[in-house]
Image 1 (cartoon, rainbow, N blue to C red):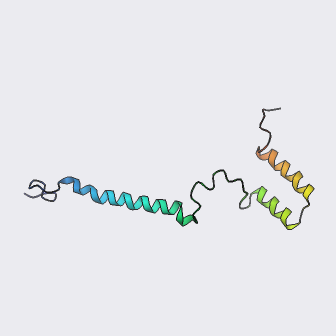
Image 2 (cartoon, rainbow, N blue to C red):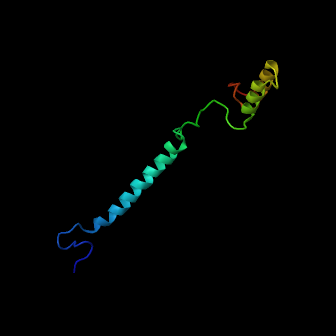
Image 3 (cartoon, helix red, strand yellow):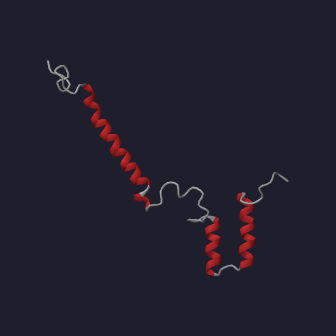
Length: 97
């Protein structure tokens, strides 16, 4: 009786069933890599971590856009920025007062 690709007769044996699994893992890995890097505009998953630039509709981004468009002056910008820094804990590295 010839089973699993002629295993008893010197064929490749049951491990030949792992080849489709290996190829599936390779394809999934390549697609995952492409989705996380190239298809995101070459930013990669690590670019969002630690990026100091404000993006989207964050309070810092809105404040920066308002200052750039001339809605607020420089003094108002710095005053509001200091409030945002205190609120989000970006300054004051010391302990509780």
